[in-house]
Image 1 (tube, rainbow, N blue to C red):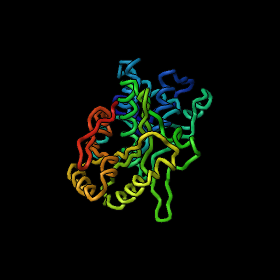
Image 2: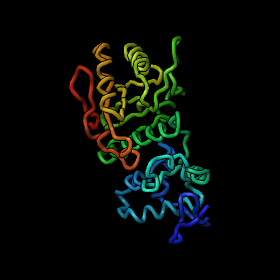
Image 3: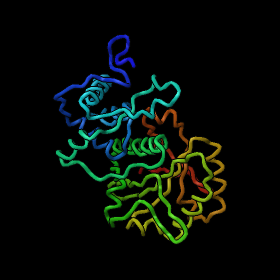
Image 4: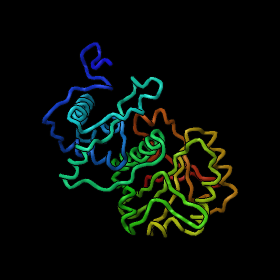
Length: 282
């Protein structure tokens, strides 16, 4: 296997180790963000700290330096896509980065998205996009582990009939009000059973009781196909008005979302069945 490219540069499969790499304050922000959301593309990390460091080339070099210093790794799953060599690198934390967070008093027991790698990565892109866009509006993103700690609750909600596990859980602090969200990222499977489970929870406010929340809770459903979203909205019409108003949906292009943050997830309205669209940015 060739270790370097024709210009003598590092490749996906090899980078020369570099000793003595010391993460900066900006890079500590990257580590904290990745610990919260998990794998992130270089474009997401750059956008996260663009408010204080505007040079993208410098950011990319620093990410490579952190990789050489054994703080970051490149998950191999990202190579399984067409044109992977032209896409931004997707990074994840290594043990040294988690150790650095621990030594800085910043390591927390976060909730990692579940499922196969690409689905969990899509989930991390949605929540990261929300986090970055909300911060620019002065809205604080509250991750799942902080919500679950209120009652030492599990992400999974169990009943006598089934167990429901959302793809992710988070809240937004607008300053004078809060909203909590359960997130589902469509995998291309039939959503009917999930709709029925969420409908039962909403009718009984079971999700708020399980997590110990007083804030309003909405269900966000993200699709990669407008046709599937429309079919989903049609299915929701059989549910009560309360359920229809509590479930919001949006279609995004995952091939774009995988490369760069999508501010529209926070800034633009979400669709509801049988009602007008609703914004979550304020």
